Image (tube, rainbow, N blue to C red; front, top):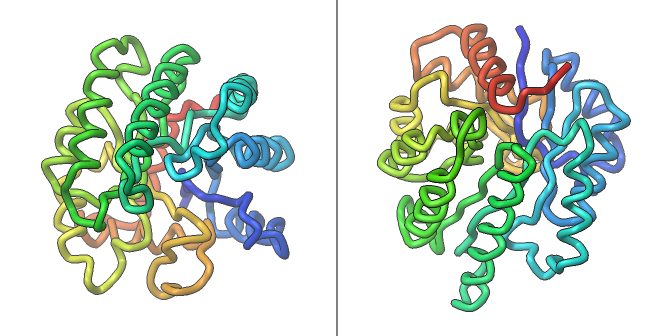
Length: 273
């Protein structure tokens, strides 16, 4: 059974003591590819270095909406240069976060930087990895409204393969209507560990309505560990627990979910190997 983790922060210092072992455990668990997203210019560089030194590991580069104190014309140029690397498969993690960022001016800056990074993704013809978090972690709010407006405008100008597969809404935690609007724009939906939590019935109901050919599985390591590892450091090897839960939700076998989501990841990111 082959699996893919399309979002894991293996550059985080929580993996410093045993990073090589974490990657080995992932491969032993059947993972064939891992995508490490950047959060700013330094972590983007670290993601690329990890991809260079490990087979089956790939990178995305970009500025996370809560790390924009790192954003400047100089650092953006550094990220743009990193995007030329053959193992950089996407621009991300980019998006909108109103949970940690409250001030109106800073939120406006988030939206502006997001638009610039989307434009860059279009220029280099790479899909995007989108982060979105509401102010109070509610299911629908201003962050969803603003993000969908920006993505809708961006997608109007897309053509070719990028128009057919513009990116993924990472660790989706929104209303079904939001997911449906993203699906209408040809986005994929990323599913993380919380789908396994006892109190996540609403999330599971949303995921049940998402077509299987638009789902991706992500650990978001070292965060959001699935049951039975909730509260512990997450790692890519645990992605199978997410696949198991999706299989239960969609009345499929875990092997079917592994095959489908791995094919979805291949379609979106075009690993090229």
